Length: 243
Ligand SMILES: Nc1ncnc2c1ncn2[C@@H]1O[C@H](COP(=O)(O)OP(=O)(O)OP(=O)(O)O)[C@@H](O)[C@H]1O
Ligand SMILES: [Mg+2]
Image (cartoon, rainbow, N blue to C red; front, side):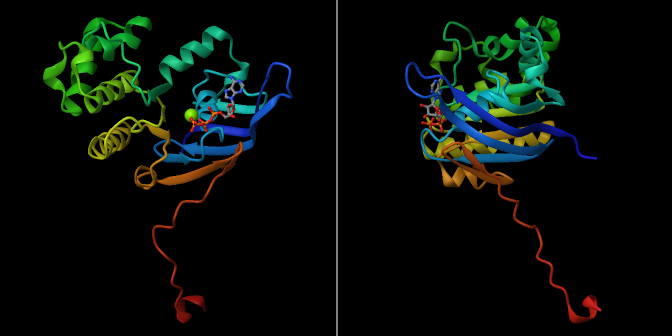
């Protein structure tokens, strides 16, 4: 049976707004993503895309319904267990990279491993493997702020995959890149996800990038439309097969 990497069950998210009525950012959202699948989420500004990713990353909790990451209901976890889940099961990539400018490329990649207390030799090995994979094997010692945007996002992708997360969540990962770099970064990201057997849920405004995913879902005013994937082959039943 295929493992479910991420599941939402009737999830609603309401934000308190000072004075005014509470604002419902997500309404009755349900889906399951099996391990290994890639899903693009598209929708207008303010439709609830980042809210959805924040819940999937266990950064925030649903107002009602269940968010299950790697088999665990995030609302049932203590704050400490939820932080650990974020470190081990979830990887995050952002539009503006969120790298630490004072550190080298290698140190940016291994940083989450230091926080998790993993052995340095293991972290060095994994960082080298990932940086080699994205074509930045020789850049380990460089200050990260000297890199181009596309290079920075490749470093951020390495950092997000350091702990071999079950789910990678990316909020407009190519939104700050030119077309050529966007294509390069997105295809690398998808290749890595497939090689690592991970799962990707990403938000994009680009139809071209969305088309690279296994499925494209759309969100309108907090309501998610989960479309079935295109069938890989059309069933053409011949009259004899019908009998
Ligand atoms: N902490 C918050 N408090 C109150 N309202 C919020 C909060 N966070 C988000 N919202 C509101 O919820 C709605 C959804 O926000 P969200 O950031 O998920 O949109 P988005 O689809 O990611 O938009 P964009 O494409 O502009 O990034 C918006 O109307 C936003 O103003
Ligand atoms: Mg957003």
